[in-house]
Image (cartoon, rainbow, N blue to C red; front, side):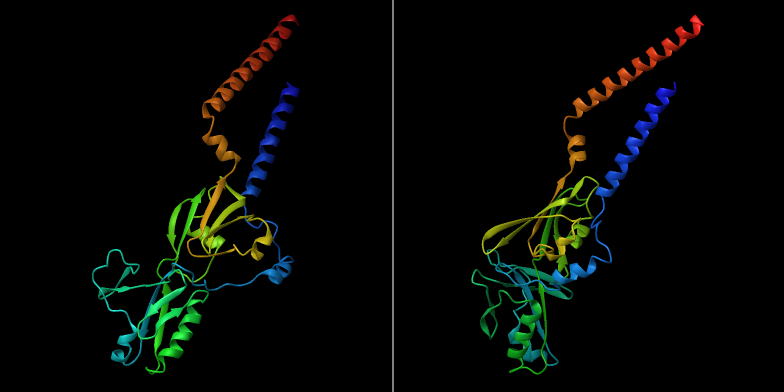
Length: 276
């Protein structure tokens, strides 16, 4: 009986140890400390804005005290989308729709009055400053608002809300993108997250370890428009979703074996007691 108790205690300790390891695997950046912050900041580059790329749709609104003076610098308001056009419409309060500026394959947009402008590689702040300088030649104190109309990130795999998510902010990190998708499930691999990105018509791929402080130096730490993030399932998910009949059979067999062992052990104790 004493030996049986020892076996039970050892099994319980094994289960506790396994649960502690699993809990550790669920954390992010577990090795980052206040001491490591200095080395992180030596390689980290803040990116508060995304750069404009080919295929982007930009909302550009020009305002001023004299509304009539800026009317020529705004696209006409439309109520019906022109099918087949690269210009999409977005609803604003007060009725009407405003068309977006499509960044063509050469990185240009066609802007009213000013004509064709090369905007690829600019941030929205850089483009705003450029437009302000040009429009100020004709309009006093113009106010220009620029936003992305098609900034989306797709998060797939082991997250709570997989899918394509609209991004309202100018800049986003991998952690913020995962938060947008409801964070990883307990089955997501935190040390092997795949990010795919299209750059100049070619696909780029990177795998990120969200537990490693080196992630802050990665060019994929800051998410760009239309990035795809895939969270791979861990072994626990694979075991829970595959070969379920086999696992159930194994559990049943082990349970039967345990019953037989206990029964034999109990009978041996009874026989020993009768002999005495």
